[in-house]
Length: 316
Image 1 (cartoon, one colour):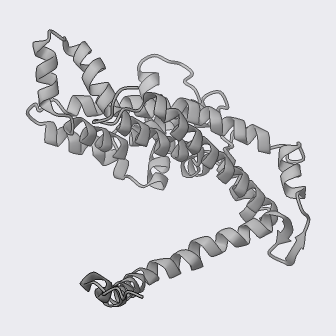
Image 2 (cartoon, rainbow, N blue to C red):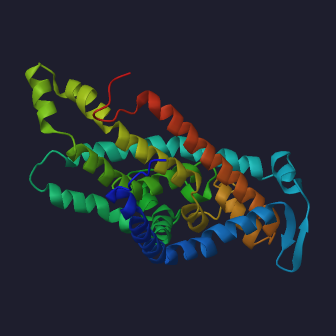
Image 3 (cartoon, helix red, strand yellow):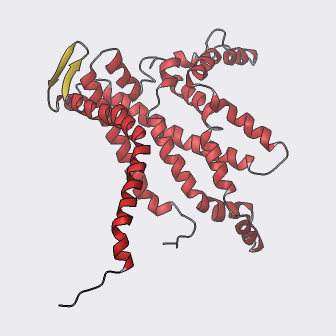
């Protein structure tokens, strides 16, 4: 029988393992505050709310297991406000996401020209996004006030005898909230992300396209847009989630009215949980919303393979 001599690397293996174990322990030790906080304040409440979603529960009674009753109530018409609030929320998202993306992109393109005073303009465009949502809603409530608001005062000065009631009129409440939200959103974080994406595109590509005879629009279509698709995709995902979970503006400005014209899904969830105290049913509403958001995000991720181009990839 021939004995095989151990190599230096084999003899060093236990020492390496001990070092890696110590390093792993130190890593877990440094990460433990975040992990503990995540388990206590995020994962734990999520698991508890999942249990409550299958229970009948209020703050004065213990949870009673009811199975799928809460979900059947929502999806099969037992809640008269569920589907209308869902429809208004998706209508809001379908309008607001394209408008905010387009407005932010155009603003970023304008601020990426390198002209004099651009830094001041960037600051001025970004300031509205720093306004807290509650303060923003209070400000625009005053602007939209039918009798002494700034907007109707201006319209009367221009000769409009009976200007709209805006937030108090079911026909104008939703568009008024859209204008209010766009004012604070177009020049905010979405615009900054677009601006960073634009500045990350090499000028050599534009110079090469210009040498080939490409005009301004052709350079935008063939250079800027393809290389900006990852940024557009990121802003799209964030924008869809933000639009679906809109709450503060409607809650402060209209309270969901008039006549439920701005009764969004999260507002309905809030009323169910903290005004009607149906915490079990509210948990079911929250999980339905969670599934919808995750489903839309996964669908966007799958569809992104068809139109998102990452620099260095080969064209399909």
